Amino acid sequence: MHSTKYFKYKTTPDIFLNISHFLDHLIMLIFAKAAYDAASYFKLTYEDFIIYGVFGFVLFGGAAPAAAYLADKYSRPILLVIFHFGIGISAIFAGLSSNPLQLAISIGFIGIFASIYHPVGIAMLIQNNKKIGFRLGINGVFGNMGVAAAPLITGILLTYGNWSICFIAPGIACLMYGVLFLKSFKPGGKSNLLEKNWSSAKFAPNWYRVLTALIIATCSGGFIFGSMTFFIPRYFEISLENVTSSILLTGVLASVVYAISSFTQIYVGWLIDKFSPKLILLLIGVGQFICISLSSVTNDLTLFVIMILAMGFVFGQIPITDTILSRYVPETHRTKILSIKFLLNLSAGALVLPVSSIMLKSGFHISSLFSVLGLIAILVIISALLLPSQKTSERLDLSSNI
Image 1 (cartoon, rainbow, N blue to C red):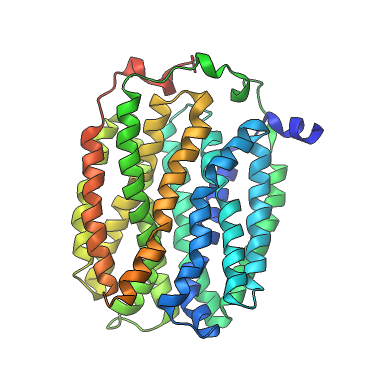
Image 2: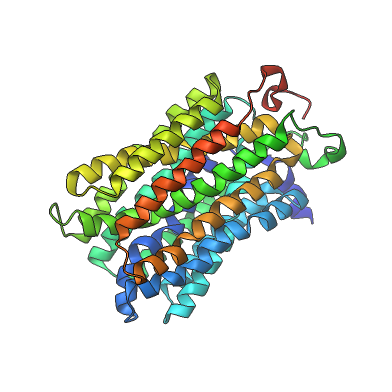
């Protein structure tokens, strides 16, 4: 109990939260690139094997509300400490798995501990109301760099090792960083949100309509994000065969796509601090529809260029929803609302594996999945049209009465 009180009022600089976001997505997406090699090792087809990753991706979103509850009951900082050591140890056990079931269970535990970051880390980040959109954009870039690093690092480790080391090496890195993260804490003020009166907290006008729109954007965006981050490396292996057949090089190209497009979040974060999030989300949805649809009918270098644009619009959506929430939801409720948002977002992303497995087993080409994603992007456009306009005086991120 004493240790809980010690952590309760601690804060940490943004850079440490940002690096944690990087590790969160890095660890979660190792399986995406290593699955083909691991399937061969366990003498299974790729289509049959990817289903073993479902546990992790379901729990990545499904465990978020529990993480939010524990963070509100005890301490946000202590939950983030558990996050680092939990994903590190789970990744090491994944690399030591001797059969697919053990690997699935280990990936499940990775999903449980990885679920902590988004509702807890993002809530810690937006406790400070200064330039929320821009800072969320920076944080998003770090998360997307984790997405970008996953196929690159995994490709390198596969070239010189095997699927097992792809989990073990990053797992050790997480444990080492966990120690640094623990030492990064500094005293915070006793304006701890958990001690504020929930019954007196007020939502901004039209918040029901806003949350309805965000549910649509979150679920559709989650499925698109999950599909794009999981399947682009494999899609490149199939569709860039006239460019290269190297597993390492296709991993590098996928990483380049993620890395370049991730910087969209900084620009979008800057835009939503200055202009209407409704307009920005509408443009993002239109861009997703056009570019993702085009990616399903192109190949080689043209596909590579279009994928950079498509991922730019996919990544660009991320800071918008969190910024909108900060404007309509009082601070006392943000951790729980964020946990529900990420439950929906990441659970929708987890559906990618069973849906794609069924499609691929039924004889559909992987490009068909991207055709479906283009149609789903229409829901993002609809969600933007549902959003109301908001007066500056109604914004809760500018109010001290939270």
